[in-house]
Image 1 (tube, rainbow, N blue to C red):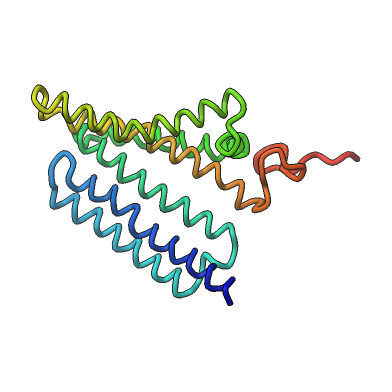
Image 2: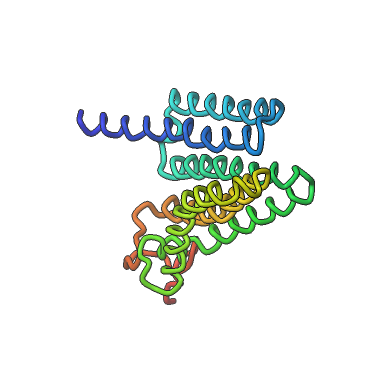
Length: 216
């Protein structure tokens, strides 16, 4: 009994996360640099659809049937979260086609890199022992800390001198943070392919998504 209750509670947390976390960045996109009724309606329509999907999945217990579904659902929510963050950057940069293309290319590059090199990246995220791992780990610390520190510092320093430019500088933080999140969560697909995979495990695959070559 206790086991099934714990499992239910964990999944309830996943559904709550799916509703709450993308909602935070959606609010940012609607109000930065200024409230836009059109953007607001669009992002909240997407959120409403996302909540509906989460409700259907909860009622049908869709993501509880396989680990891959749970991980894919989590990745989709992080992707939605970062899409809204990059939407803030797009708005502050004028909302033009060129800005949209640049941000989409950056986003696609992060997704591609995270997925293709998923084993290497996820290994280094969990065990940042090598030079690459330390870079990935440092990027995570700097990305998360920068969002708060730079935002606060710029609000103090630029508010009196470049009041209208402050949202532009703050939005620059969203690019590295979003790309780092995408890189890591798409690398996490390795756990969908092999839920038991762990860094340096004897059973770990030698290359992402591929089985080791067996001797003939």
